[in-house]
Structure formats: C-alpha cells, structure tokens
Image (cartoon, rainbow, N blue to C red; front, top):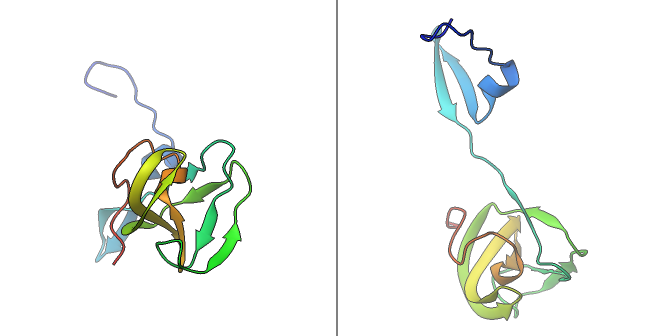
Amino acid sequence: MSKNGRAALVTGAAAMAGAVFLVLGGAAEAVAAPSLVYYPSAPGVRVNVRSGPGTSFQLLRTLPYDQKMPIFCQTPGETVSGYYGTSNIWDRIGPDQYVADVNILTGSDGYVAPRCT
C-alpha cells in the first residue's frame, strides 16, 4: 500500500524498463542500460549511407523513404546541407555506416547521441 492508502501496481515490464539488474554476491544493483532510439529520415528524402562522415566516403547504399534508424553515436565531419539545414554532424547508424544528420529528424540542431570515439 502507498502512503495515501492506494495500492500501487507495477508490472514487471514497467519495473524493468530502462534498467538492467545485476546480482552480485546476493545483492541486486541497478545499472542504467543505454537507450537505443530510432529516428526517421526527413519526409520524402532517401538518405545516403556512407563509409565515413562525408560525401567523399564510399556510398554504401541509399535507404528507402521514411526509413527509421538508430543513432549509435555522432561525429563531426564534412559540412553538408539537407532537409533540416546545414551541419557538420554525421550519425553512425552501424559499423562504418554514416548518414548526414541534416536529413534525420532528431528534434535538435545539435548532438543527440554520444560522440563517436
């Protein structure tokens, strides 16, 4: 029962959301799990996937319209213009796979993921 007399119901899924539990020597410790967010491409834009953060890098493939993709990290690279303006931010969506952030709806003009190392 909660302090105000109401019973609180927490489902197992809700209790586990956003956390990974490790059992160490009989004690449980909560460790935050990284949250992987999928971002959509700009409306009507087919996004080029390149082997590095710039247009001089090899074109690996072109994604279909309205494709959603994870952003594992972001890095500065060649400054390019696209649907959402001009920027030098490139998003790593897989191993050695980069897309120009200006064509991805991240909701920000800045970094939304950790910097690539």
